[in-house]
Amino acid sequence: MDQAILVRGVGKKFRRYHTDRPRRLKHLFLRGPRHLRPVEEFWGLRHVDLAVAPGRMVGVIGHNGAGKSTLLRLIGGVGRPDEGTVRAEGRIGALLELGAGTHPDLTGRDNVLLGGVIGGLTRQEVRARFDAIVAFAELERFIDNPLRTYSSGMQMRLAFAVAAHLDPDILLIDEVLSVGDAAFQQKCLDAIRRHKADGCAILLISHDMRQIRDLCNEVYWLHHGQVAGHGAPEAICDRYLAAMAQGPAAAQHERGGR
Image (cartoon, rainbow, N blue to C red; front, side):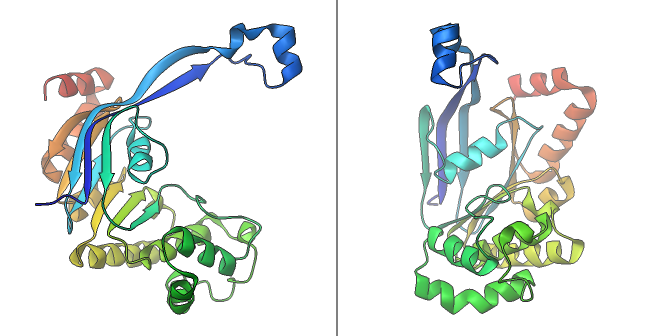
């Protein structure tokens, strides 16, 4: 089966700099170039393989800092891996973080147009879907207000509504479903299921194990940037929760022995 998302041997390196790193040219002359060099290099991801076929939903779980969001950003085209390859075929609808791709001083109306065009639609296509997007977000009364006046939940609703109406081939979701109220979360989940039934490949990051179990066909568990487990949702979620209950050493043992 052809894969909509294919990640092979991916690694992403990060650098940590000295806290006294010069921020201005005059500071550079005063302190010298020594503090310009990174004090540490580390791999945020390493040796990661992952695949998502059309019509499948794959979950990614792991502790904070495990590399989950970094992986989604690379798949979404935000940055490039330092090793390995990432391939994503088709139009991508991405909810990588709240506020990404929006402008706080523009109105909700303008942000819908901006988000749709960034997502690959023409202006005419966005206008044709505009009423449906606003109705989905339940923001008719506020759509001409600046985005900075919206609550975090309202911003999430607007961002999800835009992403859901892009007709994406790939949908990337990073934990944002936890922002909205229960009724809107259910609306989002129903939309996700419809996209999946239509052949969309979906990658979901979530700390909600019930959500992962209910929605996903398979799960990848990331631990310190590497795949500690991959398989059926029930089995991987149980292993992950058991390892987290025992502490970091148990999770490290799981990764090394997989």
